[in-house]
Image (cartoon, rainbow over all chains, first blue to last red; front, side):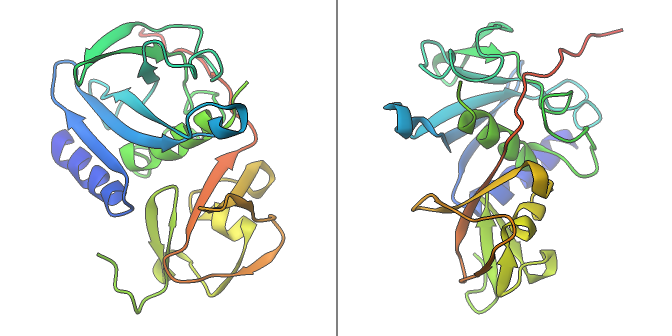
Length: 133
Length: 83
């Protein structure tokens, strides 16, 4: 059920030419490739890959956190980036999970499983990588 | 693939059509509303030129146009603690 829902959500993003992948686990992740950033203005890449854990109990449980490749120059500039929530291995790389909780006072709307999902979490990721410190 | 005859745009990589509220003329506020970002917190830009779309300005919408909507307020938020 959860997997079918995730597949449906990711297909909405693929229709908009975003490359996204479900990575089976455990732990499970969704990998968003080439998420736009505002980095070009400060000589950083204009895009970054981002990984997001699939929470146990999804979709009743809210999507939370976001991870960037270990060593990413964005980790020092995104909200919660210096407050590591752990390092994980996925897609052949190491990722550092940042303390970013958009649906829990991070600036996004309260989690609504009937409305939100991995297709809307892209809004939170784009906002996160746009507001660099 | 979207029907090229039907008006549609992409916001934050997602497709929206007339059934979602896309019109031939829209304000920045209305574009932000497609992804549920309140006008007072929204920053709307047209891709790929990254041109700012003012919240209260009406712009002509062309089929297949792409927009990015971000938030002025982005915080880390709070860690969810298991009970």
